Length: 68
Image (cartoon, rainbow, N blue to C red; front, side):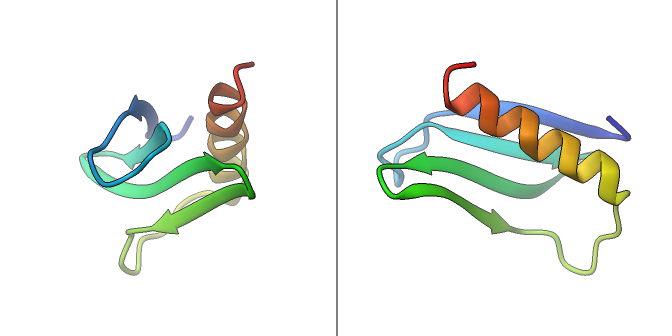
C-alpha cells in the first residue's frame, strides 16, 4: 500500500483499540472506533502521500477495527 502499514494496538490513554497507520518509519495517523463513530488523528507534519493509497489503508484499518 505505497509504504503504509497498519498496526492494531491497545494504548494506555485510549479505551478502544487503535489502528496506527505508519508511513515508512513515521506514525502518520491513528484511527479508532468509538461508540459515536470513527475518529482519526493525523500526526504527519507536511507529509505527502498518494491519495488512493491513503484512502485504501484507512478503509482497511476501519474494517479491521469493526471486526471485518
